[in-house]
Image 1 (tube, helix red, strand yellow):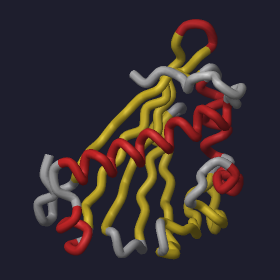
Image 2 (tube, rainbow, N blue to C red; image 1 turned 180 degrees about the vertical axis):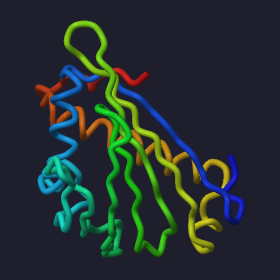
Image 3 (cartoon, helix red, strand yellow; image 1 turned 60 degrees about the vertical axis):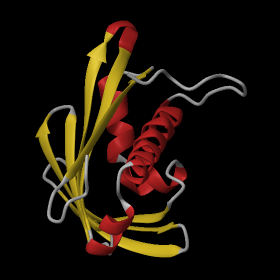
Amino acid sequence: MSAAEGSWLRAERSLIIDAPPAACLAVLLDVERHPEWQAHLQRVTVIERDDRDRPARAILEGRVGERDLTLAVTYRYPSANRVALELSGSDFGDLRGQWSFRAVSGGRSRAQLVLEARPSWALRLLMRGPAYENIRDQVLGHLLDDFAARLNPRRPGEPPSSRR
């Protein structure tokens, strides 16, 4: 996959989580508490909620490397167990994504995260071949693993849930 100008880069990954979809959705929608499990976030402020009291728009404040970031996020709810989001305000480019949760056996869920990015021209220069793949794997892996750990804290020495 290349980072050609104007094109969207797509990445997706799923993970089996030891919690039902409703529990997964509850953790995801508690956006003000995301800084407790997403190391790069420092604060999330919901500025608008929908008629079901779910986040509709929020401001995320965080730090990536040496850079402070403030991002505006818009949330949509295409179905009962899916949350779509769009982030804007970054020098890195545009980002949109979707979380979905599907029940599997034993009261567990398959959590799937799809991210699409249209990198800025400066970031596009850095995101070629293996560099893009490394960034993609790190971002998706950390988000899913941290999300799963929020729902099911691991004991020391216990391996993370299996990615699928």
